[in-house]
Length: 114
Image (cartoon, rainbow, N blue to C red; front, side, top):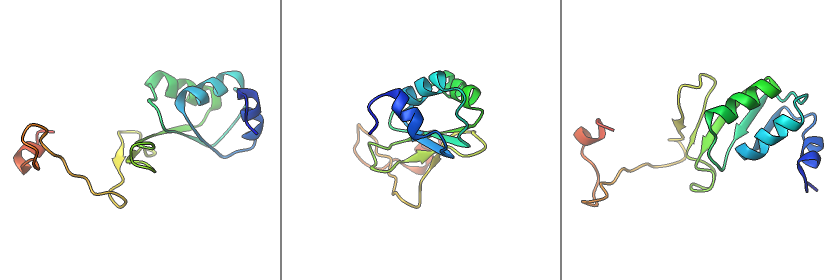
């Protein structure tokens, strides 16, 4: 059972990948900088660049971000090894952009401005 950051650290001691909320994993990386996961996936909350940088520095690993865990059930967009932005998970979702004032699909010309 995980009931503290210390028990969470013990639970993931030999993990290759740690998935969790940014603030919690940031804190864990500060109290247990000796952990060496190969990668970390931050999900279910906002991950600031300073948090990402500190986790990378403390754990010497690749850190990926993920958005939409709560809103989409499994996720909407995810980071990749190049870390140049998030990628839509187009295989799993259908995306529509609706003009909030007119309540219909945006034209291709308006979409290109996004």
